[in-house]
Image (cartoon, rainbow, N blue to C red; front, side, top):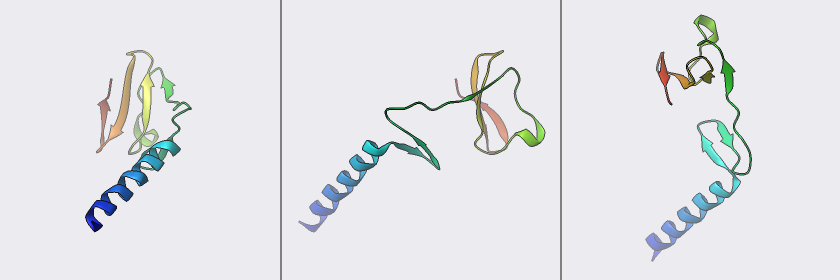
Amino acid sequence: MDEFRRIILELQNRVEKLEKGIFIKKIKIPIDGFFGVQQLSADPTGGDLFEGRVWENTTTHHLKMYLNGSVQTIL
């Protein structure tokens, strides 16, 4: 019975988090809002890159992210 209660409490906790918004690391994306992504005509370089940075390259129309030390194309 204790295991069942623990599972129910965990499900309630997850539902509450979804009602508040979706969390990705330290970013909160509201369910009823928008998540803006910076639009750039060229990929950032050097000191403008940092782990987790997300942008849209408006020349190639790709959504990109700097992850694990390199630029990754998401879409």
